[in-house]
Image (tube, rainbow, N blue to C red; front, side):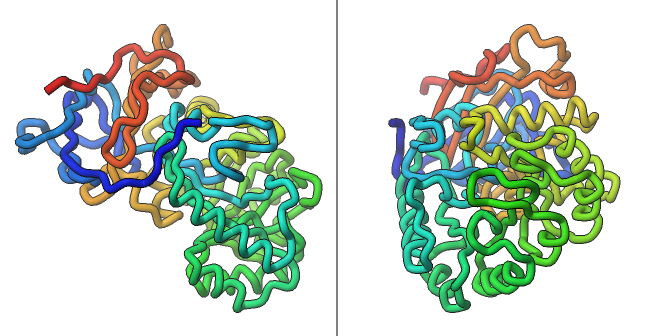
Length: 397
């Protein structure tokens, strides 16, 4: 089981010869720069190489004219213990996602734990344990924001204060526990928000035994921060209800891999028609019954860009900067002061696309040649993506 523990990044990293630099920011998705200097795991300078002071650089990466983008963020995962999922009895799934360009994950609840406690004392203890464990254990270097309790009946305001005081910052999917009514959920979501805990609500038909239908009326009344898998996980609401959700509130519109693809495209197009692309964030909603999806975020980017007919550089923002801003993360954007998380990639060998963005618009996945987390190289040639046409390399001093 590949793993790392958090450490204080030190030293200077230089990435040079960048052919295309994707910022992750909708307002300016492509940057006019060909180099990035990172110091102690943070982005220091984004500029032309000639304008960067490279003295004292410890590691130099030659991007070989390929594309650099922020590390991808999976807004919806269900971790349990370490790099193992009991849903499929699979190990190393998180490390595999890193090989698919994912550098940060957000838990939507550790609900797949066998015998998951549903009493208030037990669910709080489990949330704190998950938060502590994944803060100290990072498979493949991936940052996992975990400890996301699902709401159960009997919880009171003091419980949310206790969770927040212990460092818990997320609620698991509202509706996966015993609280399924809009009025009851609204009260608890408000308590969570009061103490700085962000919430996500299950949307659509039941996904696992014990969950249930959460329709548009319940979603609107509960008023969670994120409309979780608006395209269903797997079963989507009718399209008129999805439109209602997009039009009737300002919360984040989360589109997931393990959902209804027609509903995914409809939700994206509706948000774009409303002039609100900044609301769109991407997740996989995995591991689930359909398995782990190491390339799930890349597949969603290709789907939404190709069939949805949206520029690829815009869709990459859905999986990076949009999510970082919604989730209040220090990654996801290439700008000074942000964490140095990057994916270096190129068009896949033998794609029909003229370049990487064109290939994604045609529905092909890019090939990843390197993943950097906290300014440290975590993998070189991805073991999961198709091979890149050109490969980044670490330059020997």
